[in-house]
Image 1 (tube, rainbow, N blue to C red):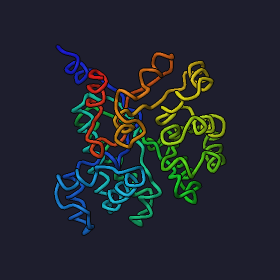
Image 2 (cartoon, rainbow, N blue to C red):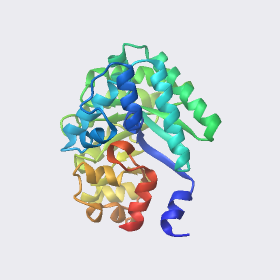
Image 3 (cartoon, rainbow, N blue to C red):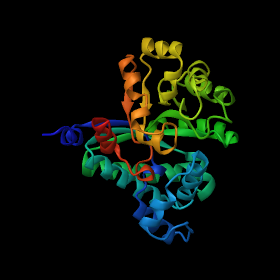
Length: 297
């Protein structure tokens, strides 16, 4: 058995993957047609062209177009079920899946309970059929800070319905962790773990703020921590997990190629790194691809 085959076969956990960014292109086209939503492309190949990101702003544009195609609870059931099927194909046994609940309630007009019911119906189907399971990370969108209180309320109310953590996503540079300190403190006081994105587009200062102000239990990305020796030592001592997504970082231009990616340096420094896919169809790279890329590079 070669290393590629070994990587495909081993049981895996994935901690950094977005549900909206995991929708199969063919399913997205089906949902758009069913819900009479226009997309910039009318076939799978066209969507792949649309997914060829120019920069992080274009990535957000693509993400918004995807979210607008979801309209009714059964849409959420379908994408959750297919996510589970895709996990099973990769031998992913457990995942923690980020979902932007506030954006979805805004676009659909549905109550969050109806959306979560659809999500958990698909999750239950996948668990019964494939033996995979996952928890939900409801995240605050940095560029819509006015929704943060709503997201915390929903996340706390839904803890018994498989919500396992509070996340923070979106453009780092213009929306630093300081803007979200109160919301994360409220969640922390209620016992909900903190898993913000930090140190992806912005530098080490974003990671420091996520640790000190948001009390991050785990860091989404965190790769730019490598630029600060004191931060590397801090993370090594505390073994704070980093959710590293190599292909995402390369496709979004954080690093020019795999050879320049700091994963190996973080690992050699003794940090706790995990491997993740972020948004598989959007980057044309699932978790098996990530492992194979690490073998090759």
